[in-house]
Amino acid sequence: RDDASCVRARARVRGAMGMDAHGEATRDRTMVHALRRLGTLETVARAHDAAPGASVDARATIRVLCLGADRHEGTNPRATARAFVGVREAAWRAGVETVSVLCVGPNVKVDDGVDLNVAYDVRDRMSSSSLSSLSSDVPSGAALRVEYRTGLYHDEAPPTLEEAPDVAFAFNAGVWGYDPSDWAPTIERVVIDERTPLVVTSYTLLEAESDEDAMRSSLSEFDDKVKWVWQAEMNPSQSTEVRDLGFDRSDYIDSEKDSSELKENSAWQCVAVRG
Image (cartoon, rainbow, N blue to C red):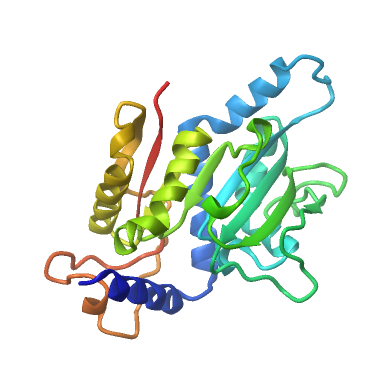
């Protein structure tokens, strides 16, 4: 199957998946699970506490990069705050005050009145799961800062070292189905230049293995610098909902090789620099 048809099939799959509570919740759960497995929240909190001149009362900020973001990450700041409720709760418990999220990708959409390339702060630290058990003046989740950008991340101006993301996610990215020039520059910039762990999810385990092959190929010249923190495997935070594509799945994937049910974030992996 040629690259153009793969890209068209990927777009049809994303359209068929649509926007639903299952997709939103599984992304939040996946991020929390990854942050715990990587120890990112604790690392960010410790680095902040050890910084010269750090205030006893001040808390840290974690920077999260969402590559290939779409409506699941929210189309306005309040919606994104809800989509990241589990991450915000986990961050606050770890001593992190703010979750700073950058949503970037060609499919980023925002509501009327929300501007691209502008940072928005959501200071309501109350999570929906905690409202019934905590008084309104007790913070139960970190604040959120979010910015939305349309385009490819590797075309963006590089951040300073202090602004580089602490962790990056690419949900159901389908790296295997695109021309290498689409994903390779972004993967190299995130993993090599910014030294940021990258978590990539897929609709099936076989697709995740194909994604891993594609990423290993794109990072082949840095083989001595990168490692897979975990290779392609089933994601314990995958969606429970099986998706009906509404079209012949053979347009997208070889059913004889992969008869698995398609689920949001069914499998995942993480690549990072060594050391």
